[in-house]
Length: 276
Length: 291
Image (cartoon, rainbow over all chains, first blue to last red; front, side, top):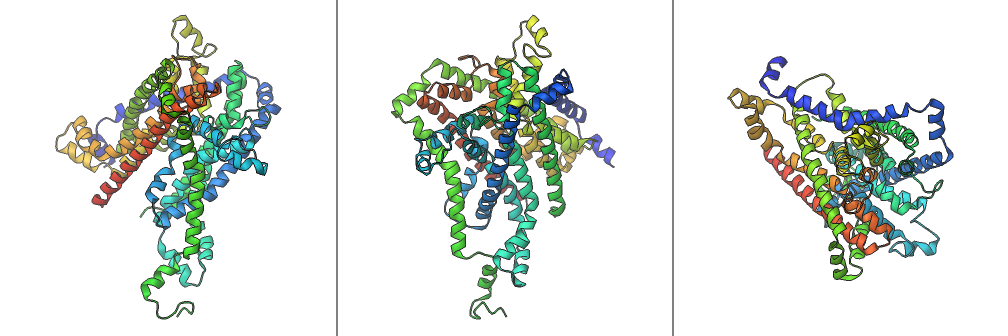
């Protein structure tokens, strides 16, 4: 049967062939070259490059700020998704569309806009300055930029699951005597765990590689406010290609691990929320 | 039965009350969510336009009366004009192969198509420098034949293609998988050619999904910064795209100029969001009539 339907549809060789060719030329071969280029380094050289103090400091900042930003978005993303799905209020459709702004706004624009706002004489910067809080050109600035970049991910992964949630579960919980908070904590939240984790990982992965929005607000001080992607650019500008490649390979390996995690989480989510 | 509820409350109200929060909690949650979004989304958006018009509309327009700004706009249109159609053709081919046929390694192929999304923009640009740069794998050969890719327009186009690679494909693959093959099979059995089947049967079914992917692909292509920054070389009037031009003006402390050019990209982002919402609305309406 399967063989017969396959023969009716045209263009299998053409479309698959073109897909694999284009994928290979644009993505796979250039990426493979990066790994091949690192083989010019010995293991000791590679290890020395990727664990130099300045590089380690950049990992700490990139991973730490990305994790915190994803955590902030985990909380507020769930809140925004909840409000958009469960409540009616004026301007809701506008707010819903606005959530995707960080996807649509070029990162460089986000970077200079956030810097202007949080600079000591900016709209929010001058309010925070008397409190002793400096955001622009500090690590806090990196956190603000990464929070902006990751904002839509959790909202957009949680929203559809929350929409499809069977109200019967909540009614049963309530009729069995659970308070609203207990229902949320014990019934709704466990069902939202897969999309929350998927959204968190997506936001974290995006923040880790982010460059454009961060470089303007970070101040870019080595050891202090220098993120890993910026360090790669610095190495390239010094024509230290092996150094740049080694750090890039570390980032690529982390990205691929996160991609596998995301695929696993989506498979896990679908297992429990199989479409009927 | 429930002692908390007074017996006079009609059944419908009881039903609503057990799965809803008290108004106080409701308004607190809405207020907090709007405050968060206002602080992180509306304030930056407003700041771009406030800074762009800080010295009046005359100065704003003056920024665009500059050869380098116009060259940057032109290059951005060239890069997007090449990258978007190519990724569109790729997306259609990939979705056709994946949705209409069964073959081994399909899941693997879908994962590989998504790969560019998980690579840092900086690394996306760097891989082409390693391949085509002066010290790169093909560098000496390119140099001998006087072909410039890195620090030239082809490099910018390639980097743009890489970062926008999955947009159309990832929109079309799930859509065409959900639609199945029966309609196309019927068309074929009734004597339509392959091209007729695609144009008359498949294309009308996927046009909104395709448009959606193209809109997002275009927004990213015109706004990409990190990847393009690595391969551009920042030669004014030659290899500067709009986002790179924003950076140059900003680093020269020409803040009003930087924000004026940035306002162009912000306008593009707002139009993208509006179009996206409109397409989603159309799509939902279409699904509503089908179901």
